[in-house]
Length: 551
Image (cartoon, rainbow, N blue to C red; front, side, top):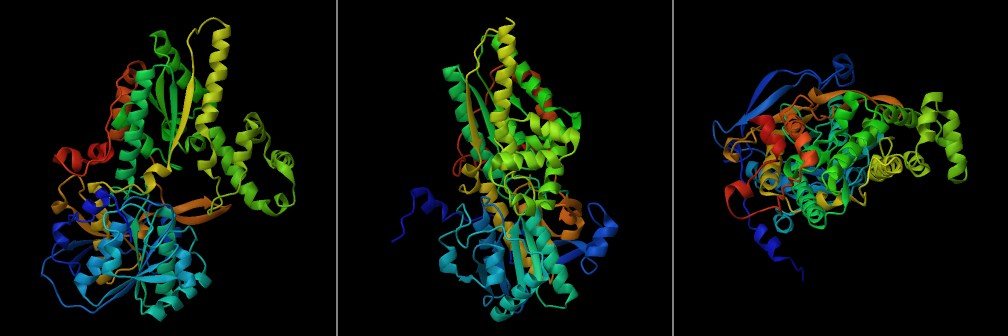
């Protein structure tokens, strides 16, 4: 017998809200706009996606009411890292398909994209789905990081879909997963294979967004979970008054999580990778920024504080970014040779000998532990696994070294005792907030509507999110509209462009305006846990980022 918590039981009864356009079902009218372009490298994107390029943005309305339609068999894939709300996306897809025709079927491919190519699946039934509505995690079918990019994979997927009578696939994932969805959609269009492909925007990192994708699902919940923990740590810091807490937060390629958590908790310093890159700060200058705050607080008798560090900070430091770029190319080029070397010392010596002079010096200046972390196995996209680099420990060591020199010179008399933290997996499978529960359900319903409208090569879009759910606008964004060309694994490849923190945007400017005051004052905010029941301002609160960007 399955046992569930009291909260799970009550949350299973929550009824997610839907936009007005979807209130009568997913068989809706689609308004199509003008032909679209690309986020960059337009000629190259058009050349690579001749069958999909130029599709119009779609917006749904329920004008005309419900119409009869044929049953549709659809397959769904969870791809990449987990994010709160994935189960509600699947619930929205299921309910949306059933609203089109009650005989429609939804199949879930197990373990991510590999489940599609290997034919590992389950049929998602109402009984099964009811156990997962409004819950965190991806455990209904699991996820995976297999890349769908080769024609052999596309053909295997086609065979599996034909066997199940599947005429549409929905990929729930981030920028890389949806790029692969675009490749799959293009291949099927070119080969006249009658299988539609639609994507849904998922990543807690918050870097899959643009004018038509206002936020990726899971960002809201994850930031609230992290902010609760940061608030708890901050209160402990203010109580004990003897520790500096360095807290590294998820966000490999952008600092959205760190910025949002800083706005929610008001730490003494929040480092933003995009700002570091814009100012072309060296690692030493970043350390000096932290030391300045430590000295200022110590002068006021406060030898404690809180520093937030984005996971991908090291990649934003220009000298380190150049190093990582050269390492990515080197490791791809010399993968065979490195495989024959024994021990870390031999590998490090080989790498240093192959790097260019200036970059080799930068690499050699880093602690050996960091050198090895930079040279570890690559991620599925051939890049440095930034999450393995303990940037907060590197910063702590360098701050300690600098403060030691000040103490020796008699210019610093305080104490610098440190606790380090990494907040990552704590937020990826959390019970979704009311916002994410509603948003994810609407995304899934919208994906079903896109399938019903015959769309392929689109991403589900739900926007106007600062308004009540009834006023949300739903439709589809062509995947090619979000794409450009980037260097991946030593090659130029089409990818959906990541959205970095906008240094001219309202969220960052709010942080900047308060930075000097927060550095020397103890003005921590304690947002507490996610609230599901109670006043609207607590239960349906959206992120500070979204509120500032859209109002």
